[in-house]
Image 1 (tube, rainbow, N blue to C red):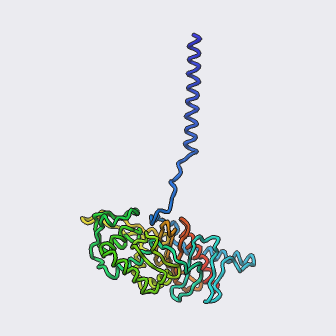
Image 2 (tube, rainbow, N blue to C red):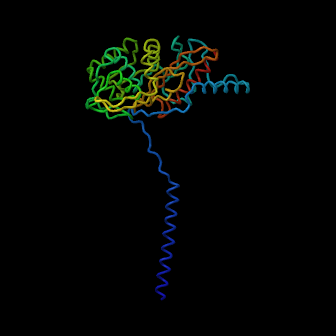
Image 3 (cartoon, rainbow, N blue to C red):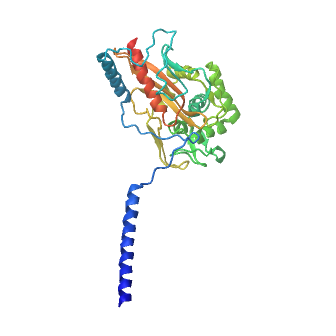
Length: 343
């Protein structure tokens, strides 16, 4: 009997310990929710951004107006944002906020520079390169011609909704995929179908014809760290796009382009990864990201000047920190709106 009691006591204690262990385990499972995987800057693996605010610049205008009222109320009209005092001088936007190593904001009509930093420095530009590739495509390739995705065109840096080896597309459809989701495989497919050496020569010829002396390309997608340019070259290129390539800009501000399954290819949903695509002020542009380039962005906007007029502006940011190219561009827009109002 005493032995039975001891056995029963041990069973009760074990039961209590088991319950306590389960409780502790459950508590830990709630306290230690699995953390999301760490995001790294994989070469040209562009991330899709779905902006909630579809009128971003309207909110920026409101912020600037509020800031001006606050500055006036504090009798401090000279805020931290420096305005442009003459065409020969440029102001530098608050560098403690903007992470880009190089940037430039300028008027697409007049060429006036509002803000710049290290604008002459040469940097890798990543997928901004695809805009130059598009100019070659539109100039030399029949939009209804067939482009085949060969296994040799697979880069290993694919995007969501990307193309597959063995598929074929019309040039005009594949170009949209290349620009909207920043498909590296599409860019390489164009070059391989056209003739790689000739395609790269033509991309560099585009830069040369526009007198972009710091711009050079060695691959069609921007994966190469030797695809380089400068903020001032890209501003000059933006002016060319604005004045001479409205159709190309129109593609880059298309939110989404879908293809149904055919005998040539599967279904594809090319969703634009540019964070400004839903903003009504956005005219077009391109994002980029590689390890060498960091984050890059070329964006064109129609900005209100506060007097009922519209001013076309290009914003170039190069080598921004991870996930900050949109923030950098947004801060520069805030600064330029204040500068425009001060003129």
